[in-house]
Structures are given as structure tokens and as C-alpha cells.
Image 1 (cartoon, one colour):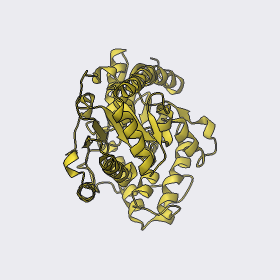
Image 2 (cartoon, one colour):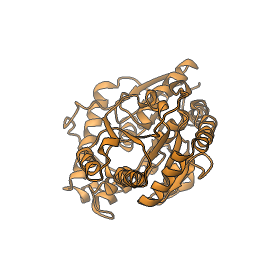
Image 3 (cartoon, one colour):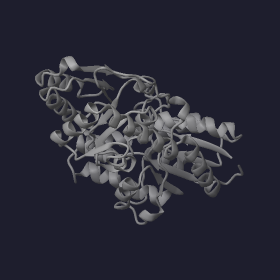
Image 4 (cartoon, one colour):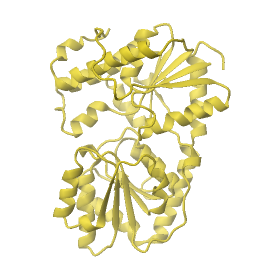
Length: 377
């Protein structure tokens, strides 16, 4: 079969989708399949001019709102770029973003198009204070799920909890498949080490939805309790300066290192002790699986796909969202007992190897591609 993987972000971008799909391509190529990657470059902006039409709702009812207008223009740009670059046909197109999926079906109506929805743009925007809950922008974005169901040949998502979320916006939620993300184990190499001071690490985009303000306050409480630590924050984003000011105000700036953007944090991660990320929402939370494959103890919030990865008290600890005291208690527990921390990290590593291996994703995708595609493997 000849398959196109249609991304939104270029594959060199960090994160669950972009860091996983090139390894999927590599695995299928090794099996003798044909597979190509396609994405919208950052330089392509405001090129598209074709009208956009959806079949299940009129997007013009939401025009004039910045998020909606930007989304529609990006849709037009994706159409323009696709027409410019794609000159051949495929047996199946696997999209990894609603825009990519809808554009591909518009331009290649006779080709089976499958979409994996990796996260909720409207949830992220709401949690980051960009749009109001229940407002027109959120309604526009959630209406796209019904459009995807109506026009595409299949919808997949990355966790059972996110499948439940999406089911609110489609007619047949049971038809949405679940394939959790998978990771090439060769990228992750645990390193035996003995840090005299517990090393905490978090890897994410610096936005309110990730709850890093809660993490900094919890670390301030740890310092008040007399626990030494170093907090390593890898990633960049719009609230970096705000977080740095908060670290100063909380008197933990000397214990906190802001690294900024890093393309391959998994090469850095194995030398630390505890991975912690108090997200306010996560469809899957790929970075937890990556940290587990690096044999780190995990501390996260009881939300979405994170709660499906962490069995509380077995291979990590879960705390309620926005609960500073609970997060401080959980960190204190894993920091103060190296043996407990080791066994928890070991359990996380074993579960990640058995549940989130890339080979499992390849097997599931291969069956799905054969069932939907018009070619032969």
C-alpha cells in the first residue's frame, strides 16, 4: 500500500505526534510498505484564497472571531500548499490534525482518509485563557468533530478518556477507535546514576494548561519543609517570563533551571530522578510514557490519558488538579525514599515497554490500514 501521513506541524517539531510519526514511517518502510510524510511549513502563511465549505455547519456564523478566522485561513493555506505539492495518488491518507484530514478529503474525495485526533485545541485554548468556555470559538472548534465524522472514513484517538470526550460531539462515539501513542525503545536508554540531591524534571510547552505555576508553588513548599532539590524545566512558551518571576517571588529561582526549547529531551532525561507535570488536561500525555521509558519515577495529575498511564501508587503518583499541597506531598514521598522511587520507576518502565512499544502501534495501524485502504500491503 502507498500511504500518506498528513501532519499539521513539520516532523522536526517536538511533541507526541511529530516525534512519533517519522518512526512509524521508518517501521513501515522496513516492512516494504510505501509511506510519505506531508506537512504545512511555517513559512506558508496567508497564501490560500479558496472558499471553505463544511457540510454539517456554516462556519461563517462564527466569522470575525480571531481564533476562527485564523483557523479558516490556515485551512485555506493547507489547501493551497497541498495543491502545490501533491501530484500523485495514494491508497490511503492518515491525517493527524482536523485541518489535514478535512483538506485531504476535500482534494482527494475518492481516497480513504483516516484521522487521529491527538489533542483538544479548544480545551487548550480555554485553559490558556485564549477563549471563553461555551463561547463561539469553542462551538466552532467542537463542531469540526461532527464534520470529521460525516466526511472521513475513520476517526482514531489516543486514550479512552479522550474518546469519551469526543463522543459528546459526534453521533456514534463508539465508532471512534483508540490507539495510544507508541515509542521506539531505541530512543530511550536508562542510565544508572546516584544524585546526591533529587533532580526533578518537567518537559512541556510553557502555557497555563500545563500547571507549572502549581509545580513551582509545590517546590516552594518542599523548600519550606527543608527538602533540597533541583527543578529542571525543558521547554519554551508564552508564560516563560511569568514563571521565572514566580520562581523569584517564591524564592526557588536558585533551585530552578529554565532550559528553553530542546529538540531531543529524551537524551537528557535519563540522568534525573523524578518526572513531574501537573497538567490541567491531557488527551494522552506522551511525555509521561517517554519519561517512563527513561526509568524515571512519575508524578502527574488525575486527568485524561495521564490517569490511564499511571496506576497510582504502583508506577507513579496521581494528584488532583491545582492541588499544591497534594503535589508537594507526592514529590516529598518519592524524593525522600530512594528505594520506593526506584521500584516505582522500574514499574513505570516495565509498563511503558509492554504497553507503549512502537511495535504495538504498528500492528494496530497495519490492520486498520488494510481494512480501510484500497490497495494491498
